[in-house]
Length: 553
Image (cartoon, rainbow, N blue to C red; front, side, top):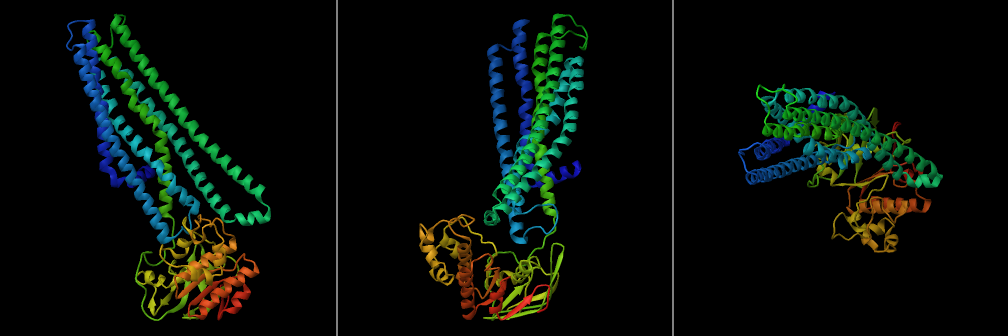
């Protein structure tokens, strides 16, 4: 598991590997400059205690300040490189995630969650890679170099100090490895809970009207409270591990520094005569080693502080891997702009079989021309929406063929085919823009005719800013029926050759359903082909032909 996670993180950061290596090298160089600063201070103070001094205090101060400025510059440059690399990785992953979700749709299986989990991954969890790249990666590079250099310098001056470093230093990474397994497991549980909570929120918002009608508000609030409490408990578990590990590692570092200080102090006083390579330690060497002791442990402490960042990044990498490996049901085409498919309008299917998840839908043969209408009926879950998506080229059939305007529907024709289509989804969705822009999808078009045809013009006129009223993503200010009619207006405004309508009259009162049905039939009479997935027997009876999904034509 650990090896696979490391490989996944390495693959995710491969595009910025050189930048990260440069940032790490600058971080290492900045840390090693402390040896120069410590040497300057030791020579100045030691020279005052035991003349002659090799450096005057002024010279030592100048060297110390100049070296400190250089360390700051190197740290600033290295940090900037790391942050830019982090932004590049996160932006690239987010673009890839959104492009794939847009192009191929949601996963058909696997433990990747729903739209809320994907939104959490793209919006929140990817940001957890930034601390890993900007803090943990440089800290790991410093640990690999700086303690070893200081250990060599310490052994050269005093084997006893070197032994203290050699014994106490490895305790920190060993303990980190033990804690790390628990930390990563806790982080993964927390990540899954965040995704589940986002999924729950998205589902509950979509069904908010039903909850109100059923009087289920207390149960809804209680469910959210339970989920939030579970997330709080998992978050606190992660923090407890992080604080515990940091406390213990700080203790190891403090004990190591204290042992070095005690040994050097007694050596300087002459109470201890062992631990050196023959000659007693001079004040310069004692001061130098005292200043190196904290710096020996500092990279290890920094790595321990960033260990939680690694655990969080590993959990995100595992989730990205699961998202990438989840099976999809991709559609045809790229979803980009394309010229309209030439030829007289026609739609023909033969032997069509469509897989959606574990279900295999067999669709009766269809032939449809301009002005003709078709109803798809059947129980909920039978596959009516899946059939509409396949006809739009959003799902690849497992068997059979679809011909559009006399051509096979494939990657080369799908984008042009969709320019002929209008889509009316079962659940209205809006952009966070004005009602006009939601209908026209462009700023200059007149939407009055489409609003009249959908029977919603008087509703729009009563809004505070008319057609310029800003809608939220849920169509704030519109009732369910009004939102459905605005969605119909959007579909009709594009003058499609074929309109695919998914339950256009579901959950509407009789008057509103009649308005929607009349608008659909009026456009069909004007030459628009129409396919409706519906439970509404009255609407189905008005169409030319009915196909029962899972039944006979």
